[in-house]
Image 1 (cartoon, rainbow, N blue to C red):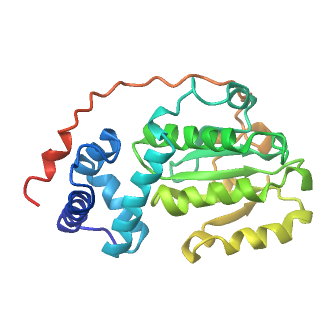
Image 2: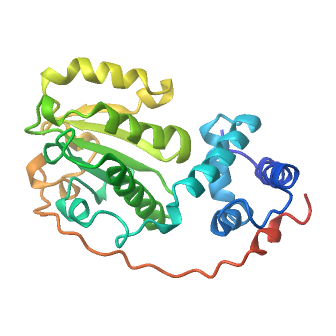
Image 3: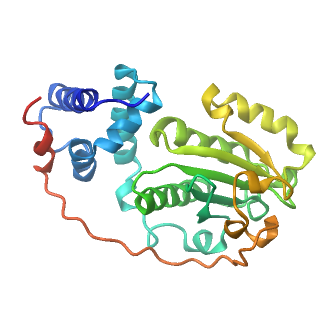
Length: 261
C-alpha cells in the first residue's frame, strides 16, 4: 500500500509541529540538510510510512529518531576523508552491480572481517559511509545486502557488527532493504543465523535468501555476479572516490512545503 499525497503532507506537518512545540526554533535543532529533506522530499517521507505500514505515529517517531541519530552521529560529516582509510581500501564492504530487481548490491566480504580486529566505532562510520553513498547513488531506492560468506568460519562471525547493520535498516533507513542474500554460508554458522533472524521483523525475515553458485541466478544475473560467485564480472575491489554535487542548503529551505500546515 502506497501513501497518498495527503498522508505525506500530514507526516511533514506533524514533524515540524513537534519541532516547533519542543524546541521553538525550527532552524537549530536538526542538521539543515535533514530539515530540507523533510520539507522537500516526498519520497523520503513515503519510505517512513511504508516502513510502518501506514501507521502515522510510528512513521513520525522513526522520522524524528532518524534525524536525531543523524545529528548525534554527524552523518553529514562522514565521507571518504573522515572514515578510516585502511578500512575503506580493504574492501570488506562496498557497492557493486545490481540484483535482478535493479537494486544495488551492498556487498560484505565476510572473510575480510575478523571479529575484534577493527575499531568498532570506526567500522560503524564505514558502514554509514556506504549506506549514505548507496542512497545518493540511487536517490533512495532500495538496496540488497549481500553477505559473501565463502571461505568464512567462526572467527569471521561478528554478531555485534551484524546487529548494527540490521538495526540501521530497522531504525534509520526506512524501506531501504530489498533482499538479504547470504552466499555459501558454512553449516557451522546455522545456529548464529537463527539468532540473527530473531532480530528481524517478520517481513524482513521473508527477504532473507540463502544462495550458492547453483541458484544465485534467481536473484543476480550472471553479468552482475562476481566471478568468485560463478558469475561473469571479473572485478577486483579498488576504492573509487565518489563524485559529489555540492548542494546549497539554506536554513529557511524547510519553509517551502510547510507554509500550509
